[in-house]
Image: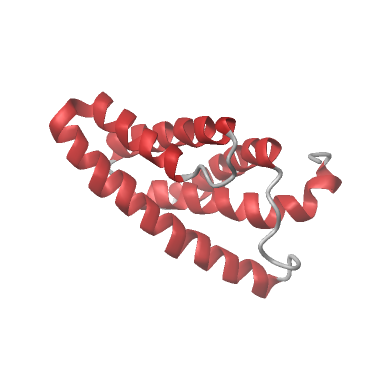
Length: 142
């Protein structure tokens, strides 16, 4: 489990940067103070990441794998994951989240570790909606 945390942060940063370059997300916190970051981490990891991964990987993908095999289960749950993330109304955002969902689905299939995919998903969202919008111009991302 201890290797999951640094791994999930690094993978979350990479995916968060890629998605930030695609959609230029706005920050959900007013600044990067420790209390704001802590609140964002709690929400993104323990609420959003946990609920979405529980639904799409643990319940949906596992059920679809039983019906259509691993590839079909990963593909269909990732497709639905991409459609669910269509709120920006950009086709490339749907494609991107479909691909990320496929990666998370494959990782879940190989490890059966819900905590791993939750931590990756949560850290990606923390970077996307918290850290990168505040530091994007400093890092040359905007």
